[in-house]
Image (cartoon, rainbow, N blue to C red; front, side):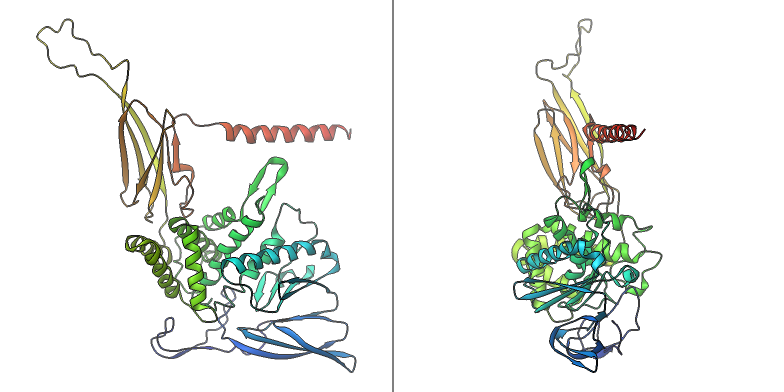
Length: 484
């Protein structure tokens, strides 16, 4: 049971978020954008049938039986909402993480996956204890609804999350783990950092999707979706990028829009996808260590408050300026402005590789009968060019890796502003390949295929997958033959 009482508004003093003067923030309920709640203490008694298993936000103070029913007394402190569930068919599975009791409420037919819930929850708690701060509440309740109630799954509430599962999910499909990690991350980005998800939904869902990908790829390196037989894996970071680029039009709305303004199927793709990919790109631009400092500063300054996008921008630029200097600060300020307020696409490509042999000068002679054009045979020289384009409007600094025939590498730094850029080299070796952003620091780039160009394309990747498919077909046919 959630959203089951008149919702308390949030009072915003002048200068808070967008408030020019003191105001109450009391939007109507918008299904996609969920909520904005104030911190408080909930003292709740639940009177339910005796055979029901109960779970709720906060911790159980006591319970007692009265006239064939049970009264459960719960207390939840420093939370923005209260949720509860009551069902006679639940089995309660308990575990412990440090000083936090984990309760999994699950149907018997789904207990086959109980280890997947508990393992994912502990991984998430471990990650944030190191990255931001330890989970501060004494309880965590995970509710896995019955099959007929799957639509109540995949939601977050203070100290209580819901995550559906099915026992026929293959081990290579980490749906259960993904949902647990995502919803549990909301205890930080929604609960402790209580942003306004109605007006700035990306500060909630986008940050959560970003950390979801980091946690999944750290603890499940085999892939969020994997098929070991074909040696195929898709990581969570790739899935977040795919979600963004799967939008019919990635330019429909900027991240800064109010949640109910997103239209034509753009909400999830931009609020979850673009925000997560954008934060990952920010990490690529500043480095993982500095990104961690930014997140720690932001969390420490704004925990149990209501930060806005400007709060995140200010904290980010302050940390970047302190650690990397004012020039880097200006670069990141430009990036954040484009990411949050703009709708333009990022796309850089390698246009061409040109290698010209330098010939000896012919000159002018009185007797031209014996005049010949001689190339420098013993030590030929080449003028080699690498040409790259900026196809999109989103400007991001780029690294360009250039490889020569002798294996020599040159790394060029480009501010990414010009529509085209070239580098010219003179020497005995030709350019054989050029690659933009070889470390994939800029996942906002909409097309990785045009990021590189090689004079002699490698076929090993294509051959490997073609061979794998043929091997699979052969094994299938042999197996079917035994049935005849």
